[in-house]
Image (cartoon, rainbow, N blue to C red):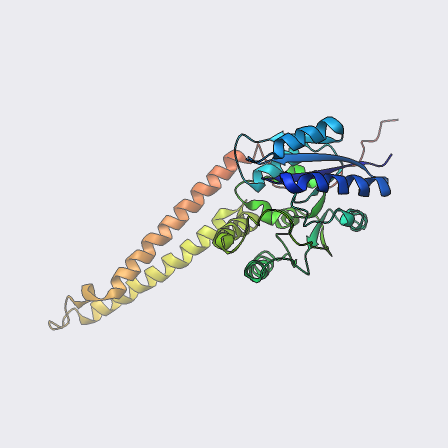
Amino acid sequence: MSDLISIVVPVNDEADSLGQLVEEIRAVAARNNLNIELVLVDDGSRDGTWDLIRRLASEDSRVRGIRFRRNFGKAAALAAGFDAAGGKIVFQMDGDLQDDPEEIPRFLARLADGFDVVNGWKKKRRDPWHKVWPSRVFNRLVSWSTGLRLHDHNCGFKCFRAEATKEIRLYGELHRFIPVIAHSRGYRVAEIEVQHRPRRFGRSKYGMRRFHKGLLDLMTVAFLTGFGQRPLHLLGGIGIVSFLLGLGGLVYLSVIWLLTRLDVADYGKIGDRPMLIYSVAGVLLGFQMLAIGFLAELIIAMNIRREHSHSIAEVTERRGDG
């Protein structure tokens, strides 16, 4: 029997499509002799999704259901599914039938090439243009700002080694950046093209209205992955630059004042210059950024004992004395 593969499917009002998806996954597993479990996470559905999950679980011991008391978002659903997954390999896929389970063996083959995370790429998307183009712009921004070059960071079809899912802590809407977070911890990330099927049921829950949220989350991820363990490097750098610019402006104005202090006509005009306000603001901002940076370092120093920033790939066995 092959290693257990956990397939995590977060769903929200997917009663029309979930049953067919489960059947397709079962068929793929049977043809390829895969040992699977299905973790279906109901993220506050209001239709008959949970009743369907309960029925599927009663009919097949490989199916497990988790139900949220209300809608908490996809990141929370994936986090709950990852915690419940018992397989050495973990998939995530959407429950709307746009992800094709026939791609699962290709993900596994790419994972076997030595990668830890395999991300799907919906090269030919079956979505309206007003959803496709913002996604393309967003993906370019993510690749540019994080250094991880992927075509489709937000693809809902992904495959991981289990240790990667256990180290990634998801909240808010950071599920878009799972490959980025994994890459920052040293995991090897690859990408494969996947078939993207047209939507048959329901409507998309994503679009232009979430673009600005994605940008804010991107700023969060860029900060956490780049300066999460050393915030003073960023905040202190900004503070020093601001302080030096403000100090330089004050020195310049002081020299001007000294050179013109005997000229009655020009005396006192330094206080009317906007540069004085900007310089004082620069000095104050510099002190504030440095203070915030030191406070952030203090918080990290207090919490670093409970959460390591590194990721261990393997450990050698201890040799006996004999």
